Image (tube, rainbow, N blue to C red; front, side, top):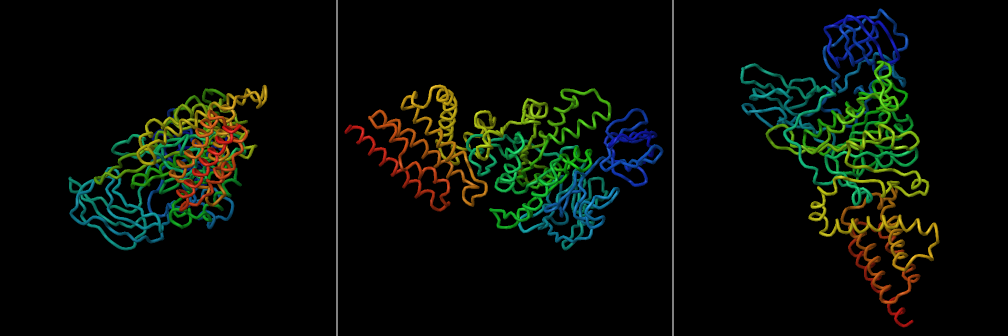
Length: 590
């Protein structure tokens, strides 16, 4: 165990001498207060350490001790429903020990050592096992069953296995390897956060993570195991978008990282999530959620570690065969922590003062997402989808963090302050957002939902793009200068915007729209557009077509309950055809 002495203290950066035997990324204990730190640079026997706690009061000459271990998280029963800081210290336990303010040097285990969990074995003595094999289960909450897996690097034959109630440190099984030596297995594993957990094979991103948000599912879908970025200025609804995805996305587990955001935003999450009822199970959303809170007033170095802590926990649940959604709010604050540490290390700055390795660090984080075949003999399939919010200063997405993120992610949901001011939510701009998963998922949509899904999507997208061009003409010369077909096109685009893309997150029915209903909504809007164009050719009056009574019904269709969507769709379609027919007859008589 390497011991050294502090030479210099610069904010969260501490430089210590005499650390020749320590390694990069070793966790160290700094000073007699035993503050947690991590080695991020080595020069001979001088180690630069980022300290994850407040360093005021530290001075040269104080001791530094290396633990010889990299920064790791504890994985096992007790994760679900927990609230951790950036280095997996349980905040509720720390509050019991030290009160409302985080005290320095508090050592609290990440997983409760006293609580007993009921372990039910899934294998028996004499069975052969390999890394990733499930040897038993623990019902962690009413909706999450945690699989206890053989750790990486352990394989052989089960020598003994127990059933009953145990703590996470109790030995539940013994595995005898080929050399005859025994390995004791507990319900808890440790894993270094900067190393991705292994898997057998990565699968193609060819099925969507269904979210129930129309603008996302129809226009800019994210694949299961995909990565998305949500950049947007202050007040454009990034946090609400992430809350909606946490609540409604087809994910078994949600890991929410509040990385450097305002304390009051994180308080909202902590207050709301336990009260939100998971629509799929009827239980509290916290029963399938892990929260990591590292707000803007908490130590800056822990902010840098928080996203690695979060994604390692998410990978652990992915390895059990779950679909996991990870929300990072926001990677801009994480990048600012990176910039501050880089400045303290006196590294050569890159664009806007960010370190030159900003892009590669972001890639290391986002590339850990994916839909995979996990380790183990039973060919489980797990998925980890990552949605990262980006908060560019002044909403300018040409800044380095947004640009580096866009080079990595395949889905871009560009939030627009102009739409937010018009109270159009979600404020995702349909003209500059994109999804590169569309081509690989088109077969899934056409086979699973409807054979004409992609055709309808392309038609609606084309109408919206042409509306943007027509808008310029209207601003210059007025609506009267447009031809009748162009006026119908503008009305169809208005219907797409107001009736389809606008979605109320707080309305009990409109907050979530199943894919089948999204398809019927598209068909109604396109039916109005096509029938109105045909009616024009038959001599109908454009002003009458624009103000058809049935358009109000099309607009209110999104509030139709699930059990009535088919019958209501047929009723509206019949009314539409009838009213269009009446207009054609009136036009013919004129």
